[in-house]
Image (cartoon, rainbow, N blue to C red; front, top):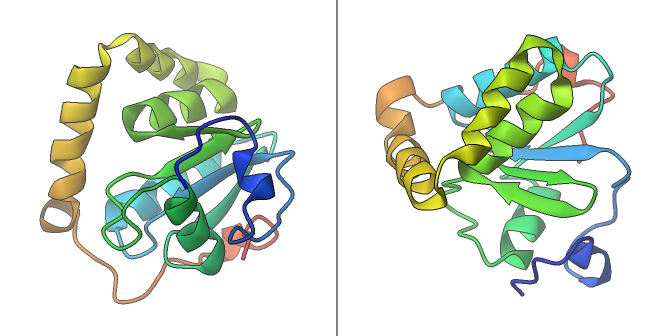
Length: 150
C-alpha cells in the first residue's frame, strides 16, 4: 500500500497501533549517522514531542511497507507528524522546525527544489555506511527509554 494521505496507516491492518498524537521518527538503528540524528533530536527536543522506533522493528517494517518503501535498505528516515509522512531532506527540515530554537533555521532546506534535495539526500543515504560506519546492533540509548515505540 502506498497511501500518502494523513493517518492512512490507521486503517492498514499490517501497521501496529501506536500513540500517533506525537511525532514519530523511524530510523535505521544500524546506521551511525541515523543514530547520531536521533541523539541530536533527543538533546534538542525540549518538548519531548518525538517518539522513536527503528526501521528494523515491527512498527518500522510495517510503515516502510505501508508507504511502499524498501524495508531492507532504509534509504530514508521516516518522520510522521500529525499523521503525514515526511521523508528524505524534507523529514530533516520538519524535525528542525518542530524542535525549535536556533535549529529552526535549518527548516529553510524545505525551500530547495525537491529534485535537488532528494538527489543530495540520496547520495548521502546510499553511502552512509561507508562514510559514517555501521553499528553491530541497533542503537538503544537509555535516553530513548520512555520515548521508544516498539
